[in-house]
Length: 156
Length: 156
DNA sequence: GTACGATAGTCAACGTGGTTGACCAAATAG
DNA sequence: CTATTTGGTCAACCACGTTGACTATCGTAC
Image (cartoon, rainbow over all chains, first blue to last red; front, top):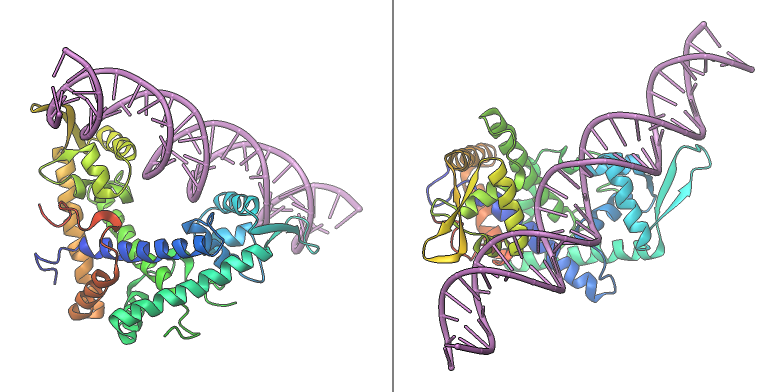
């Protein structure tokens, strides 16, 4: 039950603050490691592209945005040198989107930093509570938000 | 410790998914209750303006954005009928920003819906785990994100 | 083998939310 | 009274999203 000293709007605020804390820490660290131009969304995009690569349309589905929005995001990351486009030999309509070496480096460093940050939280809260937090969120979050149900997030 | 099956980037993803789940549910319900044009940020802005009102500069500080950005957001909410500007009789430079009746209604309904959503989470997870989740996030989230330390969020 | 519908991508116009820099008017400190 | 600080606005710009229209290609059905 929501008590007066725990109004319901504290919950979204805390979730957002927790998210932003991680993201801010991540990008501070990435900037230190040679990726100062990586912006908050970019990490998720690199993750969603993944090592095997994808297409703009597929990427849009994974991110839960339109193919046009995904295409524009790819444009920016291509300009920054993190992604590259290639033709699909099997289907002339499709344009493959792949990580460049720099993109792969950014993705790997993001993953490593996130792991470190998770460890830092575990050091503060205890590993069991971080795991419980993840379990709880997984139980209540809608799977179609950020398409957690679409393959590509937790795979390769 | 971050194990292979619990990569660190699952944590921000789940936090974001949890946040978006709440926000999406909130706005679906608000649209049903006569506020279809309220957008995700607006609830936080109304909350940050609060019943006593504030100024654009103060609002920017509370939201952690520039005064210009806060001013533009106020413009939009004035156009939608949720906020109104007034002159400060004590200081001709300051322009007070206040909730209109419609704004107050939106704020109250947002708070009520958030309370209901928190109860729904409590029904799924158990009230103690929701409270633990809030406690944990409060312990690790940086207070200057969304200026949780600035008065106006959890007061009137 | 050709015609047609579904699919992949792009272009254009627009809205929203943010930034920085310049500027003005009013308050305040010396 | 002058100089500085403060509150607000304007302008230009960028990131990220939307919808609608359009082109090119693929696959199928006749």
